[in-house]
Length: 326
Image 1 (tube, rainbow, N blue to C red):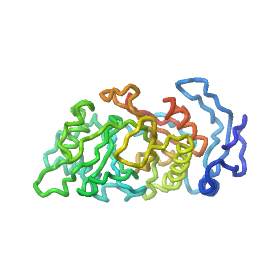
Image 2: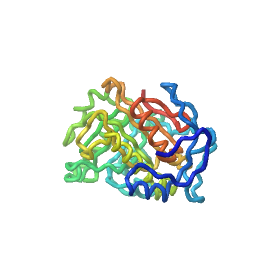
Image 3: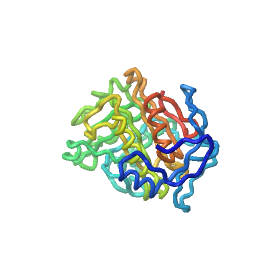
Image 4: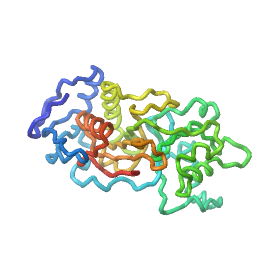
């Protein structure tokens, strides 16, 4: 553990408690400074413990991290997040250039969709965030040249989505996917399980997700800091017996998946992390919630996000960029 002092004191690389590989990589790329003692008395909001700007990564000087601007309100506004499983941790600068489901969704929602008569898909009050992730697609989607994706904060997983480009009958399952799952007129989540004719039915997502931007080809800041955070989250969750099995078809309440994602906006606030929590009371029509964090800077922040946000539902105020859902 990094020591916690009553004042912000720069330190030499400490001896960490993680595995030797973790310690080596962390000391090499993510040296940190620690700061004031905890103040966790407020059960809802963890008050600002880092007014001195400490616990920041000592990263190469050419990585311009904004440590001054207020974070609250810098989250990209959206209603639904389509998180596509690709098995990769970096992508083309614009993910639609790689083809697949991201290209089809962005095409249907853009000018090309208007030219094809998909006017009903465009609603200025309904913003769809589409990103790729490092999660592996399901085996059946790979076998059928399809895709797998999560939808947050509705907390649904679609293991097998046909791609329009793989069909030759003029059908557009991508357009039907958007109409069924991603528009304000979509059925409530409890009715979505049987709403679309898919090779495998959607399932509810019971586990928590921690998503970290690692989109290096878009911006080097998240590309350098993100993989370090992924390693720290994975190791800390493992030490707490909270890490979810890698099987994409499993969903275990109380466990946590850690994934890398493409650009979500705000690279200057790296590291950028989204935590998606399932509904507290299994009310899927109410949905879960997503909490966005920025300037996540090392082991101390990782532990607080797990201990306070994942396990208790608290918000860490000085890292908070915004939230979606209930």
